[in-house]
Image (cartoon, rainbow, N blue to C red):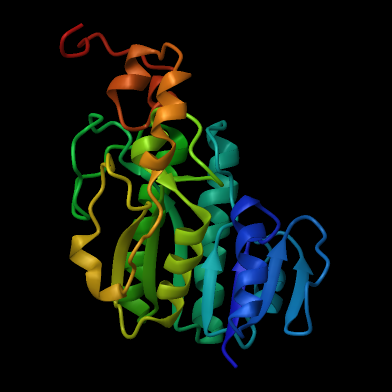
Length: 268
């Protein structure tokens, strides 16, 4: 039975994945800073801070795969971002070295690319354009995935998560929505795939208006089935006015926050 360690197991994505991974037959070690209750015989739970190597060792002992969903997921002051998204990730990768972990699936984010214009279709090799300190930390995380593959042979998949929600609720989500069914499917593809070396994949559903293309990693086996367009009528009928910066950039409100550029927006 494959042993999968999952950090951030008490978060929104972790709560979706825990029962699914157990139903798929994996042995799951669920880790978070908050206490968790085991959901089944093949799940063990661990509470602790990932910046502590001792916690990392307990989390990764015997694991073949790590799903890393822990960390700060919104814009916060830089010291917090550094501790939770940089230092903790470094400890995780060092632990993966110690314990011979085969692969790390890293929760990257669309916000590493949020200063690209809305409507522009991005391939997987699109240049980074972070829209926030949070987005910047995900650029660093993807680079760490590359470093540990090149120097230590730890396979890495950077999962560039869009708007992971039960359903889309605003106009931007018509392009960025990542439905729960597709989330579960993609994570399982990341676990079950053969040799992957180091790659990235957009975490997005099969939205008619999507801004990101996964064509380059079709061999991963991900075939999204959900489409935000099914909710378009309701969303567009209730659409409120949007900040012009948030409307223009793919990062939405992340891009608009603390935006002081004097270059102006096209058409503005």
